[in-house]
Image (tube, rainbow, N blue to C red):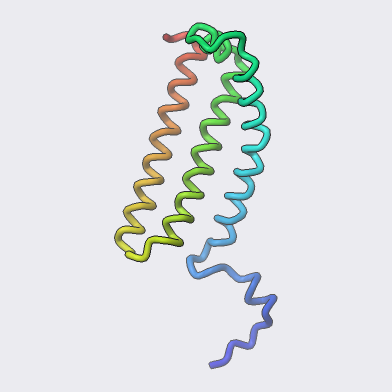
Length: 128
């Protein structure tokens, strides 16, 4: 049977996976969120008086710097996970390998997020 929908109606529909447009927009929004965070972290690290352990710990114990670093860790790893998922979906043809790769990337990114959040909170609250 012939599809009677217009090209615009077809374009507004969801992709084969059912959530491709949502994935696209989430990746773009996380990239947009990364812009100020990357600029902030680059300037802050560049203007540290010394790059030794004590200076970085003292810098990270500031509440604002701790919160911004937490945001950087979470958003950057989330954005990386989305991008790697797209690469795997586009270039891995075997369904089993694709599924394993996507699950591995998701679990690894969530583990690294938890480890990063734990490390930043521990340093921010004064633990060495």
